[in-house]
Image 1 (cartoon, rainbow, N blue to C red):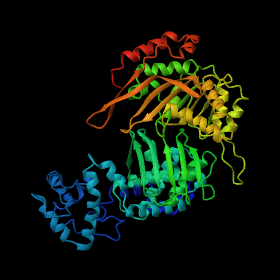
Image 2 (cartoon, rainbow, N blue to C red):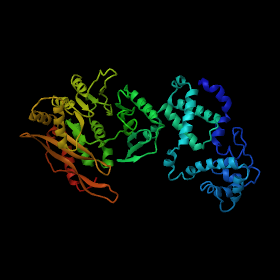
Image 3 (cartoon, rainbow, N blue to C red):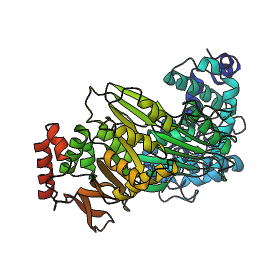
Image 4 (tube, helix red, strand yellow):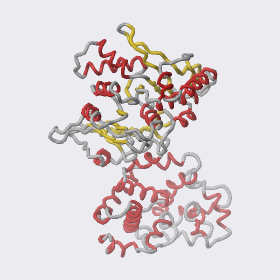
Length: 568
């Protein structure tokens, strides 16, 4: 199938034994056997000195090579590990004959060979503790070899034929060709390095390069790439540095373009800012030079492969069981709600959880800048904004989408994130028969959330009196749910707040459920508890009664009050 590979390459490497020989025996091929590929190094002199000499050199990597002397290897192998670590001083005990081998034969070739083995041996020997970080740290020599092999692969492979294969078939084909190239070029690598090189090149050709290992991890919430040399991740609410790096800024920019092109968008010097998404719904933001001074900056907000539910949030401690029950009722009785919170506080995750309690017979329309919501209902219409084209035309804004929703017979409208004047159209929808509509907004508290809504309406150019705007907000929003990421990295739902009405020119709200921080443990983790504020007859009780959920709501409020002393 891959015509370039069939002719000269197959003759040089051999389709059958050519792969296994350089793959299994690169370190020994130099000092021990006088193999065919070792033209520049033919030190067959180590064999004559003594039968004890080969085992110390061959034991760490090529155990099958030490088969001729059955008795010496067990005694020599334990002593063979120390010499490579310090650089070849005399070992205590039996294998003192290893020193004459190094200084014996050809001094220059033999000293070079052990050094290559020594450089590879420590990661294998210390594989239990720092193995994962150690493997990810790649030297400049490794990147030079990778560039050399990658260039040869591009010259050899037939990309038009490769595109016809599925992912697994394409990976196998690339691995075969890379093995050929390594054999032909007589590149000396350990088995682990060769496997790592194969995986890296497959990811470069078929995936997102160095990002692939990070994207496969389900414990990572954010991936932040600050140029080719610096990559950070967020795990358990804390930011960590990684050893992931790119070949150069050109490779990083190529991967950014590959990501955004999947959703029909582009990023370049003329359009250096772009929002996109991955196939799994993870949110992507790219800002490229000249705006990003240190190279392309890529931020990926990852979503877990398994969609979270409110019951799982209870297990994580984000909400108490009785608080989760209140949220389920809010979703069930079609309250208009806004989820408020800062960046990374879990607003979209909570919105996804709330949509699980929408009835299957409801028509739901979602509007988003980049589609992130993962609704499970059968009748869902997903809409997404569109940036301008090369001529600067064709923009479809969130306001356009929300206005169009009103003509599509929605029963609920869900706006992924309210950022501007579209808040006015969402409030109008909430106030004109589309009960149960939802949205998220950036704010630090429920009270600030309502103030931000008022400000965004004013910034949209609506010349309405302040009191009129507040009356629209009061008539539209029933519940504000506040999510927060605390300083220890944990995420908590801190407020469930009702919007009661107006008193003069002031909007009146009441908290029905809150999270109180009570202290901090010896590990720096904050200790707190979710509890009801004691409101026995909240405003939403009337709506709960209409949907037959009055007793359930009353029981949840009573339970949260009774269990207020239990920490969550």
